[in-house]
Amino acid sequence: MAQKVDYAALKKGGYMRQKQKGYGSLRLAVVGGNLTAENIKTVAEVAEKYGRGYVHMTSRQGIEIPFIKVEELAEVKEALSKGGVGTGVCGPRVRTVTACQGSEVCPSGCIDTYTLAKELDERYFGRELPHKFKFGVTGCQNNCLKAEENDVGIKGGMNIEYKEDDCISCGVCVKACRQDALKMVDGKIELDAQKCNHCGRCVKSCPVDAWKGTPGYIVSFGGTFGNNIYKGEELLPLIPDKETLFRVTDAAINFFEKNANPSERFRKTLQRVGEEDFRSQLKDAYEGQ
Image (cartoon, rainbow, N blue to C red; front, side):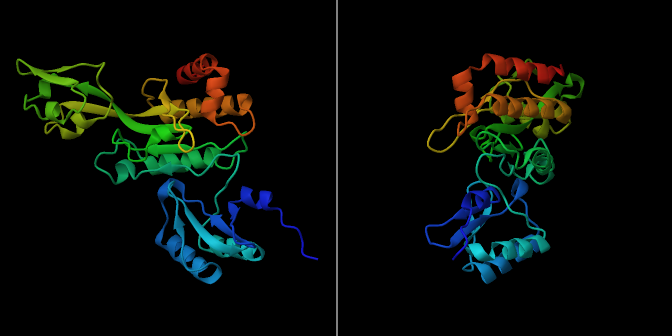
């Protein structure tokens, strides 16, 4: 008699049943969208040997290998592990953190997104929660990763400081600003702080370094994408450092864990419970209380 397969347990480790009996698609852990050449070779070899010679690239920077036989799953995971490739997760837990290439590669980037994605992954990946929970990290206000679609979205930004004595009144920063936050008045730059979105374009465009930018984090909460779409909300000022950032992300995920009903996304929890207490806890975390 064939042994009954516990597909619910397998799904926890990233193995999802297919419509074809006896087969599943295995989700891999691709933190921040990065894999080494060795990783990719390993994935290709496994897909060729155990699957049908192809992989599926997901919308969240992931890789899935379809047509893996359930009885060969342990062997497949071992082969992947030898090439430094781990498996992802499904179900009610923290998913793999996604990220754009950030300041280490992209000229527009304000923060090192990949390092942050790895740190978030080490801190939260696979944590059991009432429902799935997603982090997304993008390097700047160009927002290539669509941070606000995530339960917690993080964008790179800059606190800016104008050094008038170094300015040559060339107007390059005024042209670079997409928020109309800068104006040239009588040969001097004027900043409308209410319009500034911390994009840092003034800093990056200035030919004489008259603008100084200090990197920080713009965080949104409660985003969703799918059957119900909701843009995550920015509930805090620019966060200046990782210590503060992690206090804030801890507060968010702890609030969700404590207050959410089973199978309820973070946004639904905030709508049901109300945001007043959540905002208060975020404020305390931001201020280090």
